[in-house]
Image (cartoon, rainbow, N blue to C red):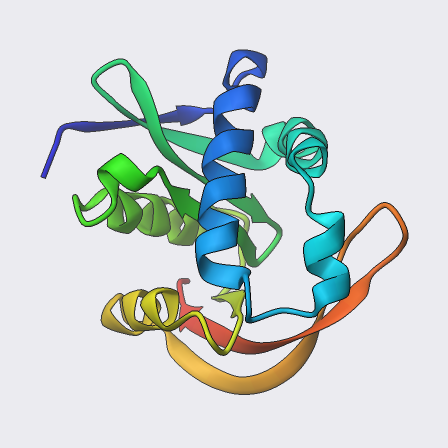
Length: 160
């Protein structure tokens, strides 16, 4: 595993976060979420959401490059993405462990996250990381036009 440094995201990271997020989102969501959501997930939307999410974002740095990021809000692990070049290297596990630590530090006993049913790679990763599938639910994916309900699996893990 590479040497991974975690730090809070800065304004300078927004473009890289948006790019990692956009490419990773496409890999895990195209064909697995409603077409209406896909139409709204433009490059500009990822840029806006990356900037808005900076206060809740931790980045993983390998060498000089941002290799991935995690966004945590309250007890929800909202986003976990790793740049394609760093997938399979252990960066995702480091980010997920940090997300669990952050949720626990806020006083929550359980963390949760949403995964599209067809995103088998992510579902397998979370299960290997000790997360449990708590069943299907409709996740309100936020968009500029209001939320779009996305069928997802709710994964949970005791953290505190």
